[in-house]
Image (cartoon, rainbow, N blue to C red; front, side, top):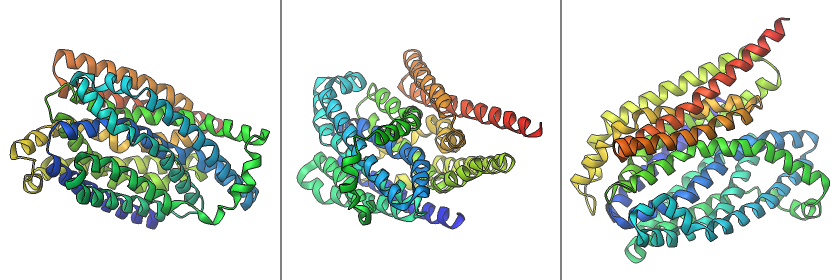
Length: 438
């Protein structure tokens, strides 16, 4: 487990490095201007949905795949193909609906910038919402690989996708301008799917098709959705940070959508290096502990992982806040990104320190709740967190300004869920340990 976690952390460090370099190059190519503001706004809805899918589907479906595989290898493979076909259809219909209602959605979030900004953002977004089906199948493919204890290939696919995304932007931006960004986004998503898809079981498509409308398939998809929908709601609550950041940044002067996006990506990206290995590898191990009902050891392992996550997160925050500005002044200034732009960007860091702690540790607090099957309660807490965070952000915006609103909203969003998850976990442990003593 430690070896796999280490390898994943190394690969994700490379991914983050590529993405940070990409952010620098994009900033220098396009500057903190209206076109890049529009792209960052356009990518908000597709990336939030994609992140929710990829961030939750593995936790929901991995226990089900493992269960089917224990019944027989072929049953597990057929189950996997059935889920791909059914969920792909659902995501396709969802994409069409989002496309149809895209103007009202964008206007609700970014309407303060005016109609021309809304319509241009909508043009960019229409190209990207239909990539969600590729992200879904790619995420399912990664879960299948995880079920076979193959942890490295999905991370490698993500790395290669990030490289391809950056290369396409560099090559095509002189010819396509801002449109090189959605082209690169689409290409990277498809490449990741091509790498991770388990081709050796493709012949099960024929076996799975007649079973799609069977009673067993209906029960299986209902069972999956019961486990997955609460995770979707919880993950959306955590991903709601992007909506808070970009929506309230759109109420600030031109360029602030770019500034806040760059600052948050820097924190999230570097924190992700520190915690992604822990999250990916620890969850299957925790599932085994919970299934064995080894509560005392589970408690120790969860406490240890949470402590490691908090320590690593704090280290990254210190690095970003006090060390990265020196390098940013060297690498970011140039092209269409001026020294003034860099100083404005650095001035945003203090607003993101407390939210960044939540970004680093939230999933480590959520995974034990998922493992014990209490995600339904967590979902309610996170829905409350979304509503409360938007209310607090709106109130702070009226009383202060957009930056205070972003910081306050993000803090409430993250820590409401974290505190709620810890309460659920401690109640579960105390109740079950008390029963075991009787």
